[in-house]
Image 1 (cartoon, rainbow, N blue to C red):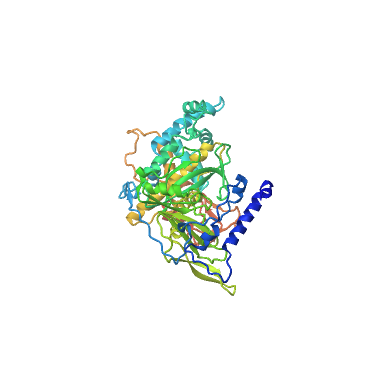
Image 2 (cartoon, helix red, strand yellow):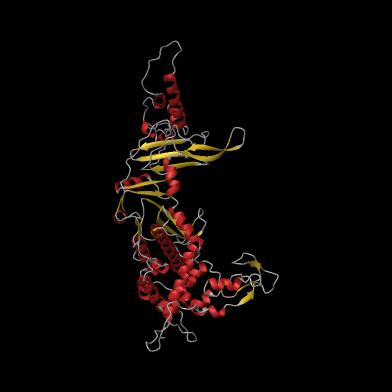
Length: 565
């Protein structure tokens, strides 16, 4: 009625009248024959008699979710077959694996210098001396230019501080504490002229926030890409570098063990965790997946931070297949609720929708998982073991269904996590007030871990047992120390050289091995002997190893004889 339409309740009254009219049309006496209709019940529920044009407010109120999803938007179960999408043909631009001579012998320092090249170290050396003379030189203590040998020693002690060589005399044998602090305070990665030119552009689009990090930042990325080529399964994820320095692009993350720091986007080989490329959060927005450098046919795994149907379709145009967890509220994710996972569905339940090349999967485990993929089929009969409660309340192991995409995602997505774990065991990073020094230490960690992974690949190809990462870092620290100490000595004239030089140099600290009590008392602080594993109260002051020294067990002299000391 006109009176109803003029009141503020008219939209609601008009909607009720429509619903009543609909039910009046569909109601039929029991003795009246109903003409069969080929349309579905869902279509009948939304078919309404055309009405006069309503106000904007009324039309908004009528926008209820009564429109059925098309047939393609219906979630399917495991009883409905799915197709296997075309699988990628792997065509990498280079042979996957290390891009070095696999038959050659590389020392730890040679592998490390594949990433921290001579040119990169020379730039750090020049910029550090320039910065030190300008900002860390006083009349009472003028800046003394450091040499390449000093820089090797600084790296050696920095790596030593990230691990444990069981010898407090190691840093002292490399350099003095005063020189270490001098290099630490004066460390700088960019030139003063470039910093000044960049500072003049502050507030403009040409200003580079990462200027103090370059060119080392670009050289490390190039070295990571040059010395290794990833296998078919790769992963992209974010990495947090811990820091509380005050700078605008510092990030806060709840889901990561590191809460405050800088976010890096990393692409890694899923098979071993090799960091192939990375960029910092506030860097220019570039794609980590470079088809001309990588090749085609790669399988990319990402988490829900990156996954979107539009991105996966664009990657497929570049012959890159992708798989990743997805946020259900994103544009492109099916909004249909027809046959979707219900509250009472058991663990292992699978629902899926295929939209061309895109597959959307819902899977129930301890929580619901949503996945998008361009390379998997919805289900294949694979199972995974879970511990569940049976009907009697007892915990039992049961096999539940798992989609192939989820299984591959769990295995391949760990590439960046493996890289993070390898860095976190013995990381060089320590507290600093300068944000670019934070990245410098992280670049050292990336170089060491990548060099260690190359070492493992070389040993595997030769059938040899590789070193552990701890042993590799200790070896690298020792070799950097040798570069510092040996090259720092001036060359000896030919006339002053000994007539019969020995091939093996004697240990300079061999005459300083002394016995000492571990705790200053004979009965306290005893430790296990390194040779016989029995308790002893003494140790070698230089080797810092507990060794027995009693008439029945002279492990002290036997240990030094066995090690030529």
